[in-house]
Length: 313
Image 1 (cartoon, rainbow, N blue to C red):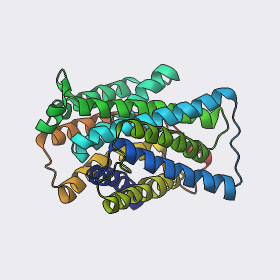
Image 2 (tube, one colour):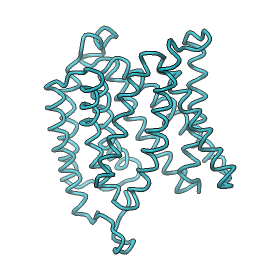
Image 3 (cartoon, rainbow, N blue to C red):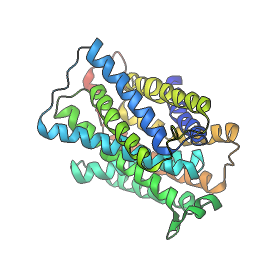
Image 4 (cartoon, rainbow, N blue to C red):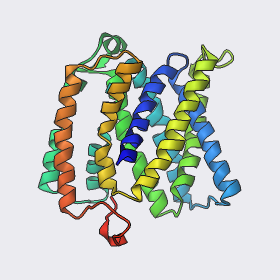
């Protein structure tokens, strides 16, 4: 259980470190350098040491390219652009919209059944985002807004929605294309990272690179790589062997809470009432949703239980 808490503390810390990185560089350059480097590392390990090959059909090559464009380039570019103007914990909280969007997309695309209890949970969860999305700071409003929502908020909402589409593409690549998740992630990181760098070269001031202070940039970039790409990702894979995906996903709601604590301690961010109110309402929605899933046979996997005791999402 301690490792589950550690997992989401690691994920939350990426938003805090990312906020620091944005003080010395641009969103696109941060995304491009981090993802390109991570992709090269992962592919080098798989191709040179694991002797794994990337053999895909035409449609799965298209899925892989889409995964790089959507789940790496667009998701991270939108997320970091929003993070530049939002607090770290608000960005993280909006990102927690993903489980609700995933459930809706699974219902629409894969015809996965949603019970009455799940629909109630989804409705409460979506309503819970209203307080925090309708509370904007002067910095957000200065960028502009659409109706009552600021552009940074809408960009992060877009990132959360697109990330769900990315997971669907990854699922198709692994299940139908026979590609390992590590290979798909490594290749898509390289594709998306290179696109982000190309975009950065067109819009950022490269003189010689869009970084104002190199030492802080390298520190934050390497820290994000270590915390997210290396530690959190591998710990997530390890924990999925011990707990159900349902439990791990539900525990993920602690991420915005950790992010708020880190932002308060390290970035002098103020935790406001809309965040607290939204957190409470969304938690109730998630509780409804996941209690309903437990009724359908989702249990924690232990070493003495047969493999059929668990059910993957």
